[in-house]
Image 1 (cartoon, rainbow, N blue to C red):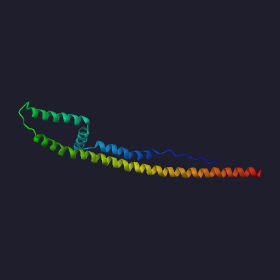
Image 2 (image 1 turned 45 degrees about the horizontal axis):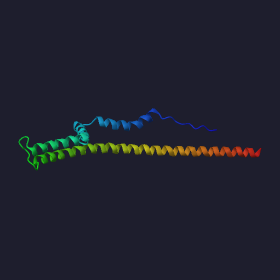
Image 3 (image 1 turned 180 degrees about the horizontal axis):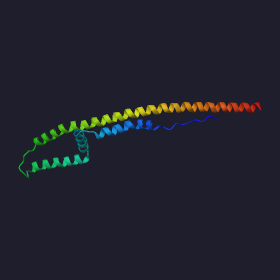
Image 4 (image 1 turned 45 degrees about the vertical axis):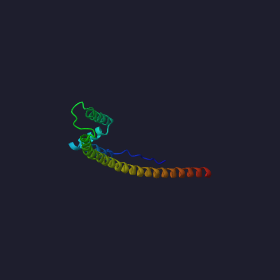
Length: 153
């Protein structure tokens, strides 16, 4: 009976497979100060803690001005507050977008790597299917030969 040998992956092959993942992780560690700041701001600005603390800040601002506990520096329509909120949104939006663009680039690279891995797995599965088909044929031929020998004797 023919023996089927299964190859173990060589160390070079394993390293070749792991290398793209390691490169993605290394790119994260080589971020500029601005990129790290954008990531941290995105984490903070997208959290419930930020939303709640900002709502508290807005409520305090309005309460102080409406009740006049101190000299009113921003009377009722809160023009200065609108200016502050507009400036905050104008600065915060592009910073968050920069962070999201970097995250999207990482996701795209991961998707490309996953696609390459899936294609390779598909080729390996096709090879395994061919090996199984050949093995089945050999087994069938061996069965045919043994049944023919039994009929002859």
